[in-house]
Image (cartoon, rainbow, N blue to C red; front, top):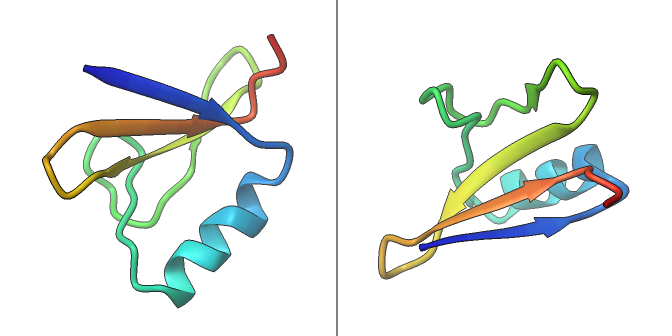
Length: 61
C-alpha cells in the first residue's frame, strides 16, 4: 500500500518531524533528506507503525 499526501511547506513539515524524532527519508535511504525530483516536486517518505510507507510531497495536482 502506498499513501501520498501533499503539503505546501515540506521544509517546515520536515523540520517539525525532526523535532519529534520522526525519521523520514528520500526513498533511496538517505535519512532526514528531501528528494528533489526532476519534475520539480519535492518529497519525503515516512513509515507508519505497521510498516506502511507514506509519501509526503509538494505536488499540486
